[in-house]
Amino acid sequence: MLSEPACWTRKCKHYKGVKQDEDGEVNERNVCDAFPDGIPDDIAYGDNKHSAPLPNQKNAIVYRLENKVFKRKVEKGKRVNKMKIISVVGHSIDSITLWIKDARYYKNIGVDMSNNVELITQVETKQYKSYAYFAAVMGKFNPYTFFMKDPIPIKKLDFEELIVIAFEYEKKQREWTRKIKKEDAQN
Image (cartoon, rainbow, N blue to C red; front, side, top):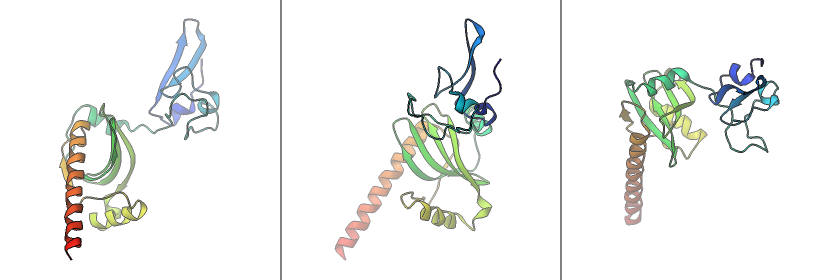
């Protein structure tokens, strides 16, 4: 029988449990999305926090804290009241990263095409005087993240809906940029 691995105690979202071969407990091993054939002992029981892929690793999956409460709300399709998109950080064919504001927090989250939600960071709204102040402060940390003047209300975190919103927002940004450049050229 295996000891409790660090992956479990640190609540890594990629940890899958113990896998046994037909031999039973003789060939037990801890497995996860990053290491489906067995998690190396220095990660499972040592000091390696697996914050970067190992040289021999066949994928780029690393430790991520699981946020079960937030994820459960989305999976059940419950509506989260007063949620607004305040920034689209980036997106790809299979995921989107954005900032949202709910009743109590500004949250930086990632949503994949299976509607799994990863909470990257969150801060309480009461730590900032206003939304405009929060956007200004965050803009100093990452000048390439643009916060919306008028946040977009949403009822649930659905990948397909979020991608449509992101493309519409980017289209408006391009139109606004063209308009400003045209006005500058005329002056």
